[in-house]
Length: 429
Ligand SMILES: Cc1cc2nc3c(=O)[nH]c(=O)nc-3n(C[C@H](O)[C@H](O)[C@H](O)COP(=O)(O)OP(=O)(O)OC[C@H]3O[C@@H](n4cnc5c(N)ncnc54)[C@H](O)[C@@H]3O)c2cc1C
Image: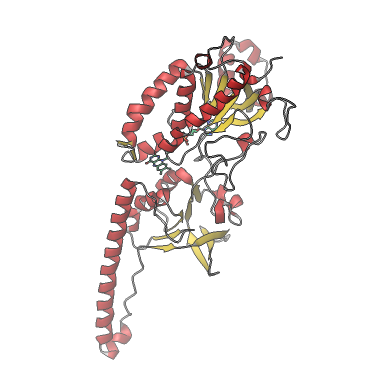
């Protein structure tokens, strides 16, 4: 049995030690940060495996670039960034390290329970087990071609059971979780938790979470009542996406914002578009109100007998409504009606009911915990980040690489690598 995980030398150029096998590191997540981390570790001669559940590397930035190419990452647009940085990096990673296109389900220690301590050693003496989902369908298809005789004897039931999802694993010395937060968008309720009835009702295809809102909107532009819960970039983009839809004044958009001052931290390109849209909407509404006042004035001047037969002009509705410091706390639906009824509460304890044909939950994301449940991790209350700013957990050798933007995420790579190396200097002493 080997002494400690870090006795198997990875970074031999750094430590000038002779070793038989390089350090095995799993990087989970093929977004910008996971790719950059994998590149750095590979350059340091670690044996890196990159796990990613989506076929194309680049993560959400790649998705965003195709949706909104004008986003700027530093001085480059998102589309340029992907073309000039991410695709060449993808090519070089694919030719130099194993990339497993699978979903990692969890990471745990082979033998140690999360609360266990090892006398006189670090928990690195036990390897990390990375468990991932395997889809056996492709495997079965190949085997059926290669060994038709064997499969001829299997009945329907047997074939079905072979097709059921499998789990597989690989062991590593260290693990970097760069799976991002965007897979785990917040729910509609206060603090991102589910509102009453949300979990059950959300299966009915009327609520869309995080970046799925783009697909959600595309297929629902025939609906009349849309509610957006959110206050930042994604909510602003969703409003912009609805510009033409709002041109039909019988459509009703309501924004439910937990914040009192929403849309303060928009990226520059969204800010410009959003502000111009808001100014246009306000100018349009002011004009409608002026026209309305003139019509009311004219209506009042009518002779009494004509006025009695002429309906009073109806006051125009604002193009959309923003409810500030408000929270969706409950969803109800009636058996005889399409759509939902949302209860919205605010801090002054006012209640409001909104009709919604679809709801977009664009209230940010939080780090899911399921991946690392079996480890000694330490996240902040909202689970958005590890408590340690650099992504270092109490579990030696397990790291969360995360950043509110790419630059910040990349700035965390050095401290993580430094922490990894600190275990090697221990061996050297
Ligand atoms: C609207 C918006 C605007 C932004 N604007 C900017 C900007 O202007 N400038 C800037 O620098 N940043 C910006 N950002 C932030 C930037 O997009 C992110 O910092 C960056 O994309 C995060 O990359 P990542 O590698 O951490 O995660 P992601 O891109 O989310 O990648 C995570 C990867 O992990 C994979 N994955 C997830 N779970 C698993 C699993 N269990 N097993 C295997 N693989 C898994 C996913 O498929 C994905 O490929 C913006 C973000 C948003 C949402």
